Length: 330
Image (tube, rainbow, N blue to C red):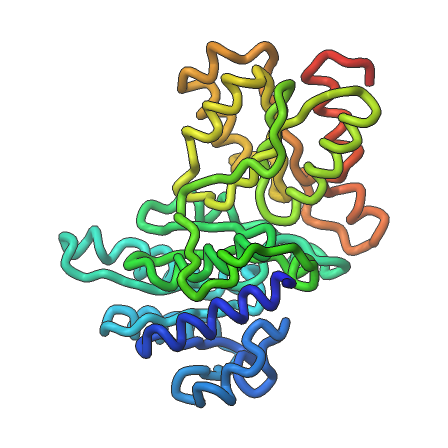
């Protein structure tokens, strides 16, 4: 099952389960979605539940928040999360804060979803990773699916959650196919928000990542094992807010080394928060070396293909950093 298919199935199942659920955004209906995630939903559920909008993120995000406050369960799709900057007041100041500011009396059950981070050749304004941006906001939950299991389980959990949830997908993952179990295919399959998954067990070093970067971490882990005999434990975060602190700490206690990998900028990123966790919990007592971070370069994402590749984490860079933290020869 591809990630795109998993998201589509999740949407359809939740549309059937709860008639309050609807999808709103640019090109989600007649065009079947800019990335075909909503393919077929207009034909099955009609224009009252699959709603095309003008190019006005501030407008339709505001409408979606208002609908959530009125008892509906909107799914607000941004064609890319870069465009969510046009609507960030609705996400951060309205959706995220209303439950607290109303003394717990007004919930805002809404999902903001769409592709996040760099794609290929779309330049600086369409390539930013917003994990750290939204992960910093009290009142939001933020998830970042990697494979098809993540995509289906986390999106369904987000739709059912009584809080506003940001679902950060990745354009380059949509067409990738992953094996799924019969459990994942069930209409009742939901993943818990706030729980990471160990996708490869190891004993020498912990590598923590999310979204597309998990691909490179697994490739690096295999390369390190075959070439150096290094046993890497790879953790797929799945959830950015809340972070699974227990999973991070328990893995570090086992491996004594920690490397974080993300497709965001280095300053104030998800990796920085994981470093803080390593310093502020019992994990610190188990570290045999400083935590290492692998991030994008601290520059706007280049348009030129060669520079774009050089500015992002890849298998070789991750392998080099892991060997460095283990004091292996470079």
